[in-house]
Image 1: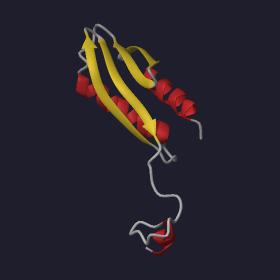
Image 2: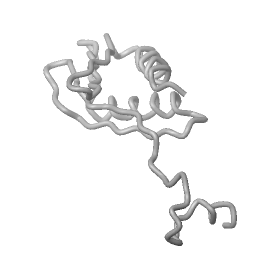
Image 3: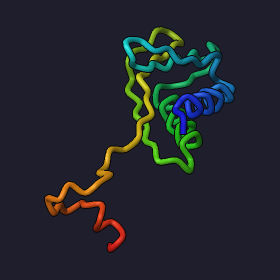
Image 4: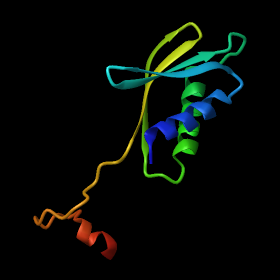
Length: 110
């Protein structure tokens, strides 16, 4: 699974919303930022944009073991900027021998 493919699907999904004039991803210092330009003649709120981001991310991640995180950064007139990332959940992948409660050996016995 390549995160670039997930990003392509995600950006395509977001671009399909009719209230968005443009959607693009920019990476600064290794952190991906999402720039959403809203059409001027619409009353699209920040909450509406965050809802569409969550829906598009869910569709892009469907069937994959991923999570997403979106944090609002700023707004300039009709431009909204978010810090958005997809990440793989961190969990134990091997037994360390310390009899941990969340040991991978006990995963199938629940």
